[in-house]
Length: 148
Length: 101
View 1: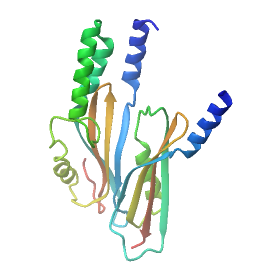
View 2: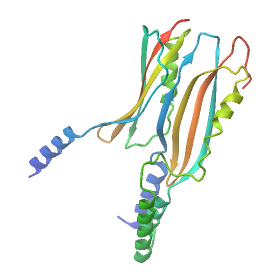
View 3: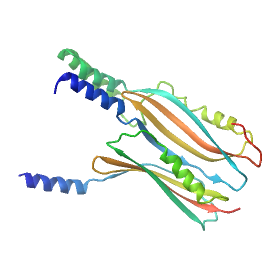
View 4: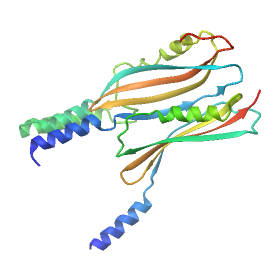
């Protein structure tokens, strides 16, 4: 297969490959007995980056064979350095999800929450990804309107 | 030779596990456990390419619909992926108790 066609095909798979990933779902108790419910969504995300994959891609598209071999070695070293259990791509900030609690409390003026669904998901574009934590839930209105 | 290869492939396929359990979670179980409600929602994809995880929200809506004026408690959520040939089914299976107040 010609190199150009191979590169185009590779790039296409890279861009569409596994765009949306679902890692974890937790559905909480839902109380519909105290009044009407108003839905809300809180979402935080952080840039995830797979450096080993980037080096692998570099090795594939490198013109000289020596550069390609060097990049393959770099990819291998990066891959074994980050070997182990993980969810999604590594991120550069381990506290990006900590603000969800404050955000969830802020969103309900009635302070009554129910039906919290926690979702850990990711949107991938090649070696980069958006590592997302999403909280869906409901404010219990108690016959008063919440402005969200 | 080809016949043997095909037979061996079919045997290997039949022995392959095809379900992956992704996550399981459970909330506080109530004392009153008479009315069990269950629901599930799924999303199919080809070789793992997905564009949305909205099927999770569908499961929550279906669950709410089964207990419109009560409390849904003891929610057991299972997220699993079943692999078929080149096709994958992502699924959220939920069971809970509906208690009228």
